[in-house]
Image (tube, rainbow, N blue to C red; front, side, top):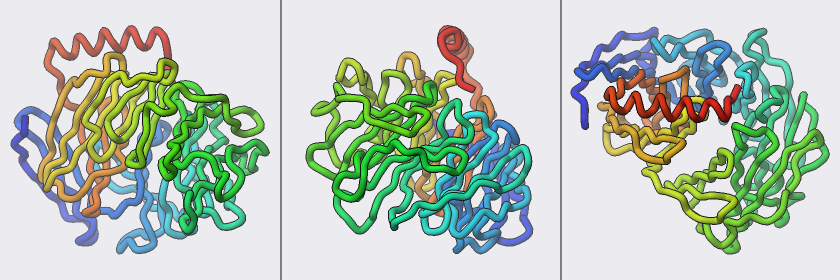
Length: 360
């Protein structure tokens, strides 16, 4: 159902900082801030969404910008390094790891102390394509290294802890670099997974994270089942693997379980027992909510007018969603009231799920 929006805008300190708020007759609301973010991340410690602003930004370049997601008001920009990009958050929300310096280094920002501390750089020329906090280890970060000038581009998957490279790694240079894309299980900080999307064998690489780094952990039941070069992102939660083609697989059974409309970006909310997608079409962004237990569609809503292609879909608080667009906006979507019957069903699923698992 497309919702009729009422628009209210307040001018910011410059034309690039106009803040707009929207409300609909069904109480769906969203706000936008005009910022050319390269990535977004949410800290449960500060309650803020952080946007990495590139060197080319007309305002606050080379900073992490904290934004109050409920009001879409900007905090004070945090100088973080040259051309910041991807951001990873520790599972306790206390540390933000930001890729900087042409994607070859990482600067950590500690939220409680409001200070930058650990810094480490990749040696030998590779760049960082993906970065994740390691659940249960707030000072550890996992990232994937690649060389954009080679094929296949993968160089290694490595773990740094307290700014120090741990000895065990998956992949050891160009041609033997391991998977091209990786994921970490948010419910188990020892489990990771990789996939090679640049070679025709489309190898699957289950991995285990330990105190000395990361190692491979045997064959995958999905080898030969999930194939293709058009998979650009994966995520794992327990036995399930999700990809950006909108497919969900059982890693133990080696079968596809379900499909979903992946759109441009998706995010998994384990604590809320849901996952969400955003799809872009013209000035309309379509948000879908799915049950993480049953893998069924719960709700569809649209927000408009929001131009550009959405990415970096991020969960904030208990009910909020944020994303950035290629048109240089950051969008904050408020809670969407559920029909009574749906709310009761979701509550029952959540109670059952919470009895089994809880993520910090």
